[in-house]
Figure 1 (tube, helix red, strand yellow):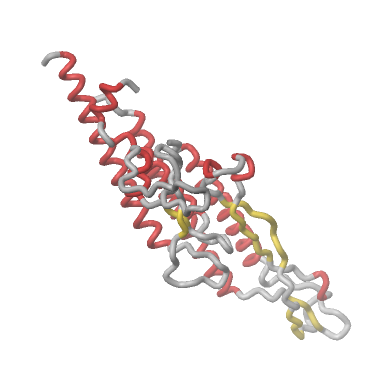
Figure 2 (cartoon, chains in turn cyan, purple; figure 1 turned 180 degrees about the vertical axis):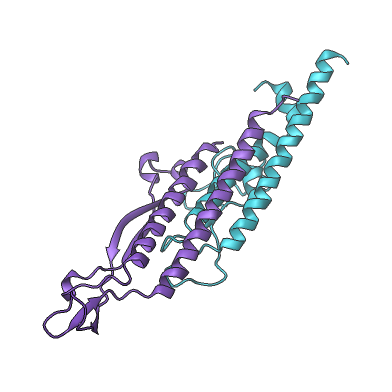
Length: 133
Length: 143
């Protein structure tokens, strides 16, 4: 992607990518609602977005090998998946809360659509600027 | 960014849940199937679900973290002992006048069926939402 479109679209392509990854995880959680011993997973949207856009914020530098790493990797790398803390334990070891996953899925879908709309309007703006209307 | 994987994940869930519905239908249909010997009695079938390990193909490291689908690893037969019923008039009755029926709890099976159908519709909903998102992504910049 050239730098002009990169700058014009802002953070939204990254947000889109993170939301897409999250759609996948939440779909898997919902799909495995009846699988014994399945542990629901999710990513922290804020942290994943910060990582995807290369803004690590206040990261601690590790200067020796024995130091504990604070970040989840390099900027642009895959987001760290975390396990959901279950509200109630199922006897078969499954930690999927169907209601919670559905709510998260719906919220994430709206987030995705919002990013799409933003990108769309930026593209239209760019197009108008290029045409000189 | 790959929304296409979701079709695989939710599709595997649909397939697993329909297997479950199939076995439940079979159990309910055969709840009253009598037999002459305890060995010949129909046994309730239950599918065993497991998360698919797609990490195996993706290799090691954080890149390997991917969302799992559902796989039916097998169908187990219930080990519950058959119920003997005294029914001398039945042509299938043995010399003591007993017929043997499978130990299937119809209420349990119905509850299981409702659970399976709820899970099925959940995955359908996920699929249709994802399809909408994908179509909107494809239309990016068109208007």
